[in-house]
Amino acid sequence: MSQEKVIVLDFGGQYNQLIARRVRECNVYCEVHPYNLSLDKIREMNPKGIIFTGGPNSVYGEDSPVCSKEIFEMGVPVLGICYGSQLMAYLLGGKVATAPVSEYGKTEVIVDTSKAIFQNVNQKTICWMSHTDYIAEAPADFTVTASTSVCPVAAMENKEKGLYAVQFHPEVMHTVEGMRMIQNFVINICGCSGDWKMDSFVEKAIEEIREKVGDGRVLCALSGGVDSSVAAVMLAKAVGKQLTCVFVDHGLLRKNEGDEVESVFGSDGPYSLNFVRVNAQERFYSKLAGVIDPEAKRKIIGEEFIRVFEDEAKKIGAVEFLVQGTIYPDVIESGLGKSAVIKSHHNVGGLPDCVDFKEIIEPLRLLFKDEVRKAGRELGIPDYLVNRQPFPGPGLGIRIIGEVTADKIRMVQEADYIYREEIANAGVDEGLGQYFAALTNMRSVGVMGDGRTYDYAVALRAVCTSDFMTADCAHIPWEVLSKVANRIVNEVKGVNRVMYDCTSKPPATIEFE
Image (cartoon, rainbow, N blue to C red; front, side, top):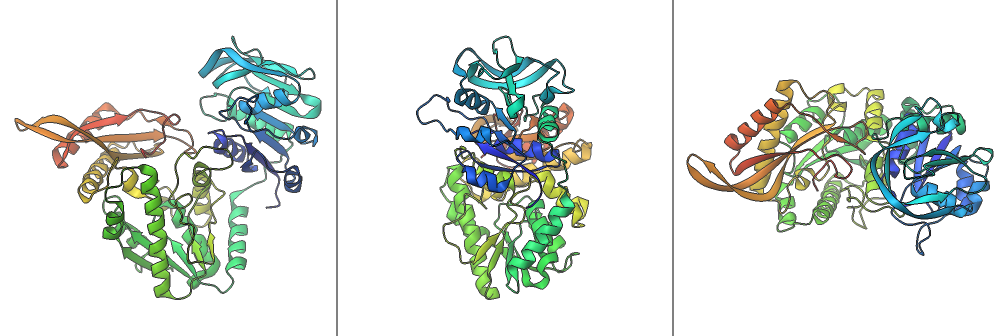
């Protein structure tokens, strides 16, 4: 892409994708790359700004990730966050040490509002801290621009060289004015114009797909979720009847979902697509039998997806390309650079090494979830489909803790249906990013009809989020939760207990496995 961009260099932080997302909220294109990206490559990319992420290491550790000091002499503004701030200080002559008192959570930070990065920020502001090491002394040519009661250098800058550093995490929602700080860096300091728009992305993506595919045939992995739906419509606009969409009903879908997907994309739906539904429930159940580990389940489901598509491709004839609705969080959470693998996504880390296609096309690979929805609207996809509840590719396989069985699938399908129905009936679904029921592997004693039961516990989850990288627990009215719990234990055989998960992301993920 030729537009202006900011690049994020990943030093192993868990919020790296969120940093990129915040930059894009400024209408500036942003990508995440490993910390050891070569200087030549960086120069070739011609970024308007560079951001260093956090990370779990100590900058003075023997095997800790470092970058070349030359990056600070390129004339490109650099913002270091957490580990990134410490690395900047360490490489440029400052002192980094173990802090006398660690800081974790929401912390009051005193900032110098005369500095560009803190323009229009309150002098006392709440920021999210997460560090054991700290900058004990800033480099000699730096000015300290923020502090806390226990952190003398909560932020620093060298304005002449365009170098900025913050110990806290401005990218997370818990930093109240963090978005303003990022905008100050991207727009005011880096000089970005904020001209990256979704309509231009869609147009360019369709052009690139058309050029890549030529007269080849394409197979699209269609789940019916917003990601694969947007990818399918994008491909249809690019190559028309050269596209065949295959919907694999793996038996791990929500109640009635297979029929709902077919009603939208099948022959009676509004789209001119070649649609094939594959009922492969038993095939997936047999592969998952006895499997407990969530990563193993994801990889099994991912490989089986590909094998089903290979089988269908053979029926269709020569197919050169496979299309998937992979999005940027999938890519990053599946491991990038020094980042920890949070979870392998069935369409990224779960892919087998060899597939019977010339190439895999992922037109949404660089988009976040809300950007995908914007792209869907640009493509004219109806809001009811664009705004559909997110659903993971591995489906209920990762909403069942432990072994997946047909009976457990029935339980979680029924419980989830009741939960979603009552949320809608109560009119409390507006503003919810995602909500669903999961089946735990916990069994406990209960009493029903004067008799003893020993059945499973269902966990309800509901979160508020704008980016799906961070999330807060949703405050569902108690009367709604009470009604849901009552219906589940009475209507779902095998369940005698209902719990509500009130954990934020982080430290939890939105899904259970």
